Image 1 (spheres, rainbow, N blue to C red):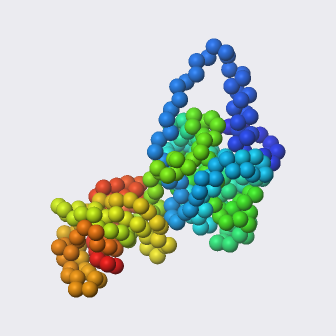
Image 2: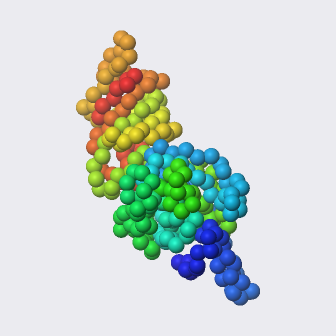
Image 3: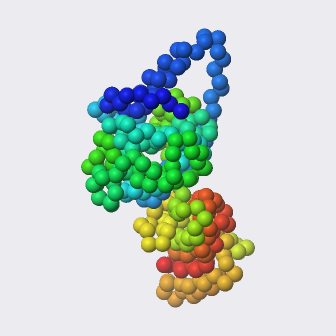
Length: 297
């Protein structure tokens, strides 16, 4: 865990870097450096509709921007980019409600400007506590799995009144910040977030790639959980097709049945209820089962 230091109205990563340098200087000169570990492919740190650009290094009032701002709706779920241990930080004026995720790979991730509102408006009535800024029950030292809920998007700190967003930083081997953009571009987005163990149904919009042996390959463009806002995705998913799946066609002269599942046709797929697990949320092969398929829907 990091040492607690006064808030001098600088970004918390600057304070942590200073502390890290002091520790390094205190080590014996003959100590062998541990080999660096590689940052793994990440789970995308937000669930739901989100937009971002590569603004790493852009000039800011306090110096170059050391992360990427991911814009999303207020209270969108923020999830663990990899498995690791959480450390909460609640005393930075500029960062507001934030947390460190100390990844199992040795990479540290910063989640900054988390939610401090009690409503869906910018009321600033909340505190940096579990259930508001952080996931219910979240506390320093808690171990989390990749994709587990850690907090909620907001505009706390010096982001107050700006579009809610997550300032996300990547520090390989707990060192200097690097551009998160390549990691975010390769990150695997979750199709949905739901409390683990609950039962959910997902609807997917996309184009049929193939339908063989009871497996439907769908080049998905959007995913939706219940009545939530559809999330844009770009993934090919392999779904099991239920034996009693209903297939209908909205195309002129189209016919239903499994023979209608032809390559290149647009389709909307509704899944059977599934237990909310990380594998299901990732859309791992055959974790989701198509119970209703609407061609041209």
